[in-house]
Length: 386
Image 1 (tube, rainbow, N blue to C red):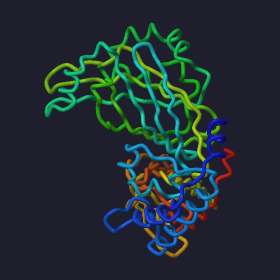
Image 2 (spheres, rainbow, N blue to C red):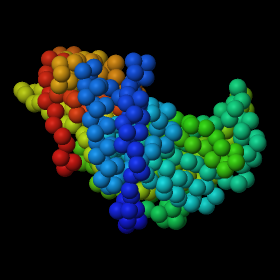
Image 3 (cartoon, rainbow, N blue to C red):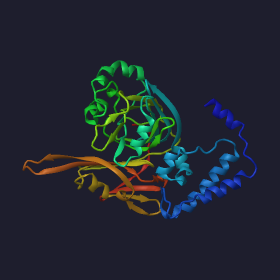
Image 4 (tube, rainbow, N blue to C red):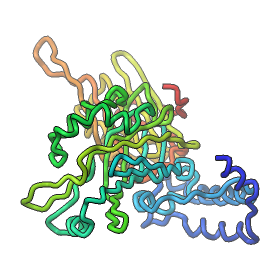
């Protein structure tokens, strides 16, 4: 950090930089066929001009420079999303590596909010893995490499050596190529379990390719916690990563390592704000948590039957009057419904909730409220005190 501040103090923008930046940002304005940051229609031009001003003022002062998004993030959210103030505020250059015997994990970058994080993870395989064979598997029509199972824990107290000392006997008894056999260990039967995020979570792992020169698999990870007591930025985050496995159709899967690996770092974000809102009434409650990456809705005593029904009944209301239902903006829906039985034996739905990721980054600064059924929930910035 001291090196960064020192560099910034001596940063002098070259002649003509302001005009070049202005032209580049205007050229990167979202087009109808390239929409990666959702805003109400009337705000696009204003946002572009505001971004130009912000960039020019910042660079002219020599105080900061735009951080470049990893290409994995750019493919997921679009190049123009990377240039927005929101996209820059959420970005964290991590570049932390963890050597776990013959496996090395590296987190390159993260996009962070209080409740959701996206990560670019490199998984460097053991030298014993045949690179030519694995590339054939990776590129074959009837073969594939299953991604590693990744679980998340709110701690910085556990080192690789600590985990190995505590759990190595369990590792030796597991068939790492059998996902169902090792899932119980990765989920709960491990030395990290005491640091689990409580209250539910959703997560996803997407393959981004294999580099045979470095023997490295790359993944895009996403994780959203529904915990009411923990955020992602209040303590370090530890990833527990199982081995990936290679498989040909009709053949037995082959684990690419014989142990899990862990990596720990501290998530940080400048101002990737989270909005929250809650409305309560007589035997009724609606709670909304919304960030640029995802949204969570919880209801009690409302007329919804399941998470899909609830998502379709959720409407985002923008400051200019624009409205759009949540199911048009989101993907990766997860959630649940709680039920009880009345005295007459009738099954009653008491609570329904869901968590869903936005397909594109959402400009939360333009949101006014969220309508859940006939209940309007005003939104305000999270205080980060959970």
